[in-house]
Length: 207
Image (tube, rainbow, N blue to C red):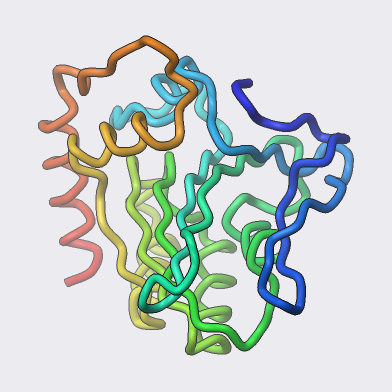
C-alpha cells in the first residue's frame, strides 16, 4: 500500500515534549498510516459518488502546520481498518496527542465524520482552543439522517471549517498523498457535478 506501514510495523507518529515527531509502534489491526497511499486506494475510496457501495472505511490525509510556518508541515494519511477508533479520533490520539502547542490542521477525508466522530471532534475543539481544524470531504456520510445533521452542525459550531472537496482538491491529494510514480490523474468526468451536488446538501445542513 505505497509507503504505508502494516498494522504491526513502526509507522505511527507522535510528538515528543520538545516538539519533534517520532514513530511509535502501531497496535495490531488498528490504524494503517504512512506518507502516501496507492493510486487504486485513492481512485476508489476518494471518488465522490453519491452511493458509496463497498467504501466502508475512512481515508484521512492530513497536514499539520504551526502558526507562522515555524516548522515544516507534517503530512501523511491514516486509514481505519478493523479499528476500535475511527481515523478521525485516532488522529488526535496518535498523531497529535494533547499538548499546549498551537496547530493548524487540514484534513482531506473520503467521507464526512459519523455521529460519534463528529461529537468527539467537537469536544476536542472545545477543549483545545489552540487547534484550528479544516475538513475537506469527498462525500457526505448518511447526510439524510437527523443525528448526522445535528452532529455536523455541532462540529461547525465548535469552530471546524467543513467543506466539500473541489476537483482541484482531488488533484492536490493525488499530487501530495498518492504514490503515483509516473501516473497522471484527471478528475472523474462527474467530479464537478458530484461536488456541486454535495455542496448543496452541505449548505442545506449548515444553514
